Image (cartoon, rainbow, N blue to C red; front, side):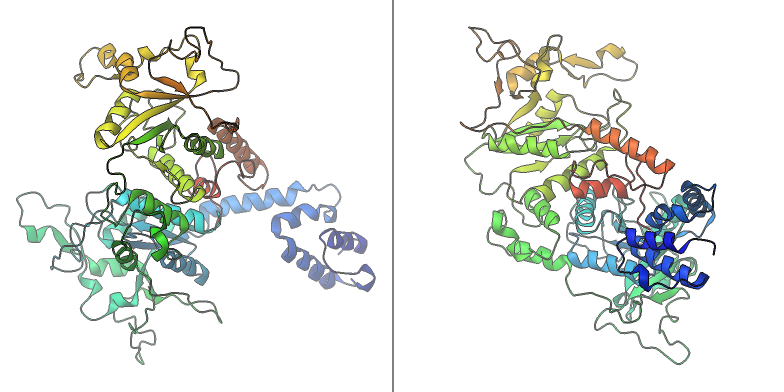
Length: 586
């Protein structure tokens, strides 16, 4: 009330609002509040608090309301209402644009604060948890691959703050979880969330009684009757969890006078996904089966143009991933008969992968020193306690980067050769594993000239001693295999600024002293190798700083690394809350 009218007008004009000071008549409190409200709506709460510092009483500071807001927000996170999370389960083999549109519309409906896509684990049979009938299903793409495709879709289709995420909850199970078991485990692991399950009205048609759905009988053991392996828990499930029902064309549910929704007959906690007034739920008839069918029907599924039949039906990054791994086509290296491929192995932690990593991989291809580049994120490194990001997270970030950054036909792909090992593979072991799995390829390993400085000897590199067992001397756990590695494989050396190698008259390249099969990466005549000094360490350092700033003042996360990692990787970092970042999409 005591605030000077001119101060308010100055705030309005500083925000660029179309208001002329001479036309304002701020005669009372209501007029002043109305004008300030227009500023708030125009710039958002955080900017508003910052810009209106001049309106505070004498002695107050701009941090005062901000600190109060932060404290209130933080307390609300702890003791306020729990997050409403809608579980969108399915095979997602592959995830399609329709799946992602559906997830977005659930958020837009206001029925949930977040949507989690949960790719199912391996399915030995279909309908096993819903009835006693068992019917075989076609072989599915491995769960980790489907999980990765979902991450590609979510992090390249949505903004990094949009509250849709992907869960790996079933990725490493031997069989898909029944719905009730999945919801119970999620509830136990995330007590701050209220979970609901998304289903279509086609699930409510005659012959599919949810009350008869089954769960695993945890007391069952080998030798017990097979019919006792599952127990009916549908009634409990319907009592304990909400179900969000999406209307499917041609699958109508008839309402009655006593039940206007038509859903009470199926359970007490089912409700329709309703859009805000005036909006229509966006959906279509696109299915994963249709995508697979089109790929199978292509004459040459390995062609660069093979995606034309599904282009626009799946996210572009997912299309690239499908092409690179030749999913659904039944092809295996078609078009490469009679010619061995030269594959450059680009290993590292990639914690996280950066734009410089991608530029380096591309330049190796451009140099024509290799036909393909395989990015190989290392497995767990006990010798590097600072490497806390899981191999799966680093693999997914690499896959997002490669498939969103490059066209589908560009010969760069990501290998999971080390992802699921107990620890990182020594270089020689990795190259031997790749050679065994891909007998049509000649592998070379990428190193920088910084690896060839005084005190570094490739011939002393070691491998795992597979004959070692617990109780044997620890110093025999690894054996020296550097000489064999240097004799068996080529090494492609990239010159690093400041790390020169001494050339001699007998050795003009300077590389023979390190091994017989080392060669410099050379660009075609007239071209310069494009490189930069960006590192994963710099990214982690900046995110740590951003986290400290965020905790001190209400700043936006990740601005310090925007443009240094692909946008999909940035979104993944935020959604997975890596490197001290927090997901603020809700």
